[in-house]
Length: 413
Ligand SMILES: *Cc1c(COP(=O)(O)O)cnc(C)c1O
Image (cartoon, rainbow, N blue to C red; front, side, top):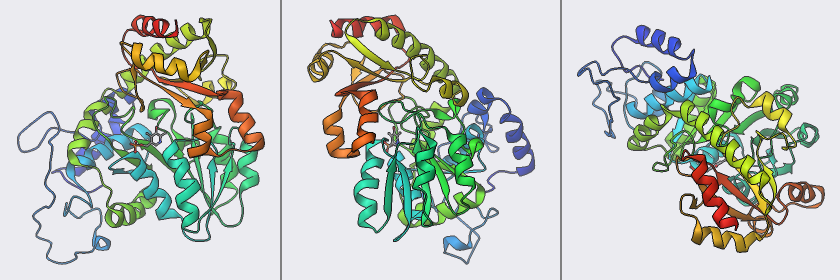
């Protein structure tokens, strides 16, 4: 991104050094002591505008890498630091942050697609994005095909001459179904006009780096694992310098859903501990998943780290960390959900995920079909094979796993 320090060569060298090891990158990438004060922690620059000697050029099209900061919708020093850190974590050339994960997804999709274009989208994914694909995009003249991407052949056969984008999410909300990103990458490589975008929110860059597997874009809700503490919303899209430059011109500057510097500062603080937190999330999730799998009232646990996950082999290949997200089916369904909401003491009964606090929420298959997915035939059967009448989606936090299991045992009865 833009030059904003005294010695860009030294900074660039330091940044390159730091990207070698993930834990060091998470702590240091994008940050360096303030040259004016020596402050070790990053500054929070809330300024919306920047004093400039550049007398001409009010259009974003006149900006280049040598330009200083001009206006915070275009770029901001604190947000730029977070963007550099995320680039190091994802192994990406460039990053653009947004005010939420949905702003990131919508910004990318709207900037790439127009009337007459075709989108291939996974048939189960985050509800907001599923509904964008079902309702908003067709209204704007974009055609959308929904496929079960757990078989990459379904993606291949949905591609048409007008296809511009393949949108995937792995593991996918809410049933932890995986997509083989390398296989889809090979399919997309045969169609030069087709871009692949991956919502990698559930995996985090600690588990999976989609750009290395052939994706052109990776998207994150920073509200989840990367921020990690449930107190700041944000989103990001990462990719090549050229692709993200074009996205900045269109989605940041013209749509305007940019990240607040204050949220960038909070999320950067969260991101510093991402590798350590993911390790603990995985450990805790494995403990909770094993406890649930042994519980007589639980009929099914879906966690990529368990050998019982139908795609466990793929998970081992594609995920360096199995993450803290699991789903389970249990006797009682909606009734049990009510009991959880009133009886859980440690786990919060709430939506969202990726926080240090454990969260659990009941996702009823029928109502999800009505509002978000609208699966039919084989696709509905495939979904029900995972979810039955509904699943509890659990984001396993950083508490002592013994307390989490005790809490769940009390509610399960
Ligand atoms: C939460 C989430 C989003 C949306 O992000 P927000 O920050 O809530 O707007 C998108 N995709 C996935 C997988 C998510 O979990």
